[in-house]
Length: 400
Image 1: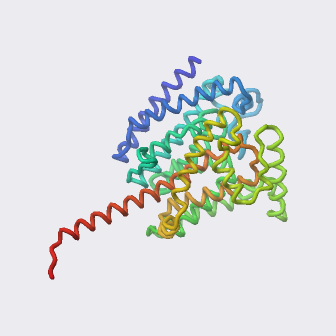
Image 2: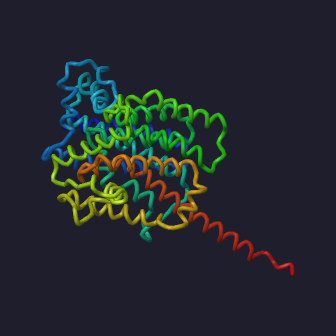
Image 3: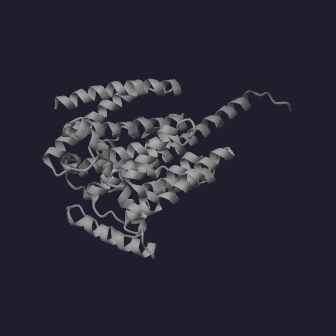
């Protein structure tokens, strides 16, 4: 455990270097907030570690896989679960990281996801928004417990979340953030190739329909990169569902999703019959369940409280004003909403267990939160401008 404590200190010092870098780029960057978030995230590392010691956890198999393997490092360099082994291999084999140290390392990756989500939100939305009368929406979003729990351990959750948020932050200025963008794409594609498909589709649709005037060369860069990348990796994406040699992709995907849903429901006591639900109920289940009436255990009750917050926030965009806003929404909003809906839609066909749903949805919910936050900030900004115009008109003397 001493090694884990030393690693926590080292990573804290690395954070300060990163904070210095982003403070120079963004004058609104808060080192105090990010340090608080780091220690908050470590609390969930401890919680998950204790949980993993007393319950079955994939983190043990992720640690033992490279430790017990006789393969070479780059034998693991391929899309899917083995890419986690590739990431872990040098730390486990060469640097002799123990289980606790690997948990800390991956927890830090999850924390970096929150760092980049902060940059993504704050850069695009400078207006502060309060919800439930007194709560800052940005602070609420950054400190949601369930998000930290599932991104604080050794596994896919932390690095995929980090990759998605790195991508979201970098895509606004791809030329100047090319390294961060490439790292984000690599993590997304190699951990979950199908999610890369949704991200690419969302990005292209966002840039095609966003309200901003974007230079021709920037559009060419984005379209070529995303569409070209999809073409090059299409076999790997289809291979995730065993569809790389399929002649009937839709039909074979239906068979795959039914089998996958049945398999997932066999080894847990929180199964839900997703396959029999109509699509709206499937989406509701993926986004907002478990709720208190179907919470699986103590953890489920805690998650239910957070899901209730999600639901109350979602209600804020269920009005005509939101759909009018979408017509003129910027690239970042349309990209986020497309990624969120495409991923949610695909996940509903293979998820059939509330425990797995709680974990899987953590990688995409921030795209929904961003959309809600932007809409509420736009409404607040429009009200401020309207009040200023009204006051200005009142000061102008009548010429009649």
